Length: 165
Length: 137
Image 1 (cartoon, each protein chain N blue to C red):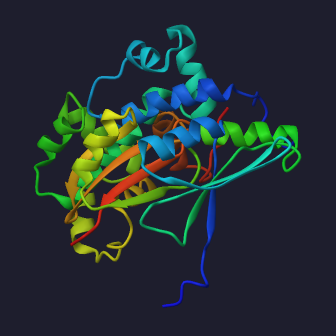
Image 2: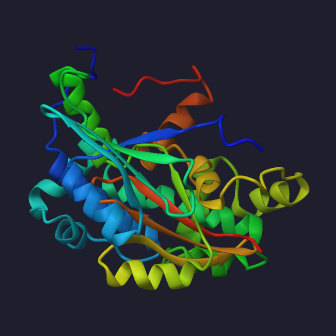
């Protein structure tokens, strides 16, 4: 079968329970989500949780949480007048500096720049349920933020797409 | 508008049809429209009481329609919540949330006021995800 190498069948019952951990992060991405807490939601032992989650959803749980936080921050920047500091804390960051740096590294622009651009652009999405639209704008973070930083740095003097070693 | 043309059945994949009946009929208030068995195969559709022209099929991924590997893949996809979005329209989202929650429906999102309406999210036991949106008045 033509499947990505390393893909093994996963038990659907396990996947359904892992989905519960993903749903809980979706519902409360501003909360602290330790592996221990997520493992408990899924009824999986802590030692296996992160690997099972990554196998199921393609990204490690902490990186998934990061994309959800950034997605929410983007929505708040676009749809509210909350200050960037308020948005950082409401979306689960403990420091404004980390928020700003991560946001820029992943999306390529600062929170302030995104807000200015979004406010200037016309919107034609009124008929799409808000949640689906939001998911469609989720950052597609297929590599670690640190790796993305490295690649972006390399990209300045090399090819656009760097093969991950 | 004539009711003789249009979409009649849209199917979901579920992991267990008895469990799905219990969920959609007892917890959500749908009615069984057709429940026909032929050997191991079971054609099962339910209907929203206010929507007689539409049936929601509750089908099991299985042979001989699907080969074993495809059956496994489909089961995984459903359990991962990767099937497309479903939307249920209700008159009163908060009341429906309270009622369904008391019956044990697994909500993924509490009712939220936004864009001039209220929406909530839940899943069926198999992993199919629903948005429940209050009809705009």
